Length: 159
Image 1: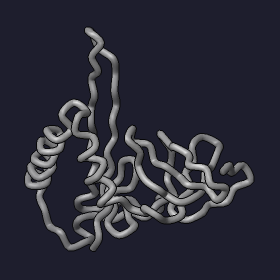
Image 2: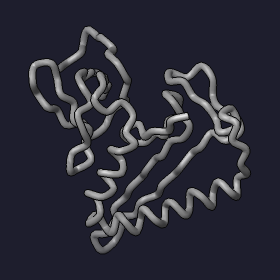
Image 3: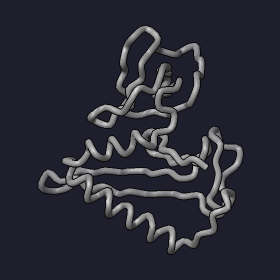
């Protein structure tokens, strides 16, 4: 089974969602930023009837307890937080992320609000935006949106 990262915050097994990461940030005193990170992993079961296919570790034949999974995630988090180094290590993290990127070089459509941008998933830029190369030669940075692999035509689509 191939595991990959789906921009901006999902872990895929094949093309099925296995885990997701959510961040919430808030400005606090002394010009500091507080960030809360939530990681949800489908361990035993997964939701059905979702817009995107999903799976679980159990469905993949991986039997792991909550404590062992937490320890593995915690160790990885500590390693990558060290690499991050208050943003100074973003280049290394970006390189690592791109090596595991789902859909890189393939057609994608990103829905952001009521607009859809379609093209080829070109890269992740130095600020973390997904770059879509459109059929008319534009390179559009995307900072947020729902990524769909392939094309999803829409009357309101923009390129």
